[in-house]
Image (cartoon, rainbow, N blue to C red; front, side, top):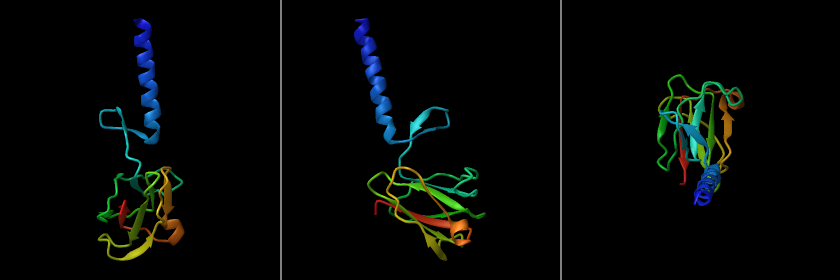
Length: 133
């Protein structure tokens, strides 16, 4: 009986670990690990290579919502789900009106980063991103 219980526990742990590799794990407010959706956008004020100044992460949709950052941002990290990509446009104003540049459509689940300040010399103040459109 004990052997069966131990086997079930080990099997369950393996299934959970294997199943969680498709999504990254992040801590929530309680300090526990939760699965994060693979498609996401996260602007950064420190550029792509510093790992500093990361702002709020959010999940894009097909509505093209305008995300505003009064102090601007330098680059954005983004990822798709392995099938469908994420694409973003950046604007130099804070109302998504004055278009300046856009990313490619990145469908990989590994994080991709565009550093607009280094690539275009601008510091965007707003952006729109799309996923699954």
